[in-house]
Image 1: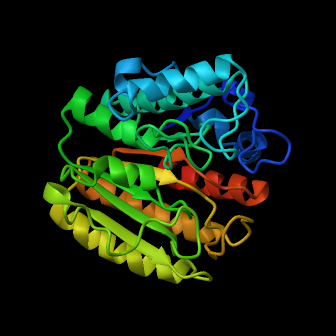
Image 2 (image 1 turned 90 degrees about the vertical axis):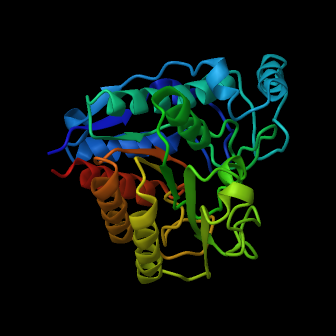
Length: 315
């Protein structure tokens, strides 16, 4: 069994989104329950988050935006930028520690303490733009993680695999001109699904042209559609040869998820994990850091994350 890292802290539960919001604390308690039930939790290398340093967050977000977020929480403003991004007294701390936890996971992988890592964090991140909260997201965790790998560890080629059912607009925008970060997204067709970005024609700009790859999936698409798209990814990665793989692990493309219309199964997530892990083993010395994005059916989420971690932990 590979020692897999696990980033989690109860402080993530304190980000209170209200009683009817899909991105709620019970998502994490469902994951913990599933891991305990499978006897997995005690086998993981536990990593405690610390707040991300401000200068690291500023690699992806405007200083004025960070101030505005923090001040809004202190002034008990009900939401940041949009009602889908509600604020509670603990939201800023949870968000900065979600990012910080992921960076701690990266440090542990780079130091050789673990081969790979799953970060059970909230709030999620991939919709957050440089100076705007969107889609339940405040800081773009995965974009900050990639910038951190570039700056702190001089990693020159990073693959970001985003299989959340919604397109990671913020992540794509952060790297669309950067040939050192290959952004790959599988998501429900943007004409039928939030946020409306991620068309197949969006391939990056300038020096980054050809380093963005979008797979818009028709409503009803299932495991086989994803596996076929993944074959294209595997071919692209043969040329790109990433030194590190990051996963925006949304589990809301599950057939049982209420927020979209894609029919991946838990078995489908297992196979996708195995394929992405294979890319990392071929090119990146197995280095993978995966972080929670969406997933709103608690049962499906718990089962899918458990399976995802089981595959990461396989020797």
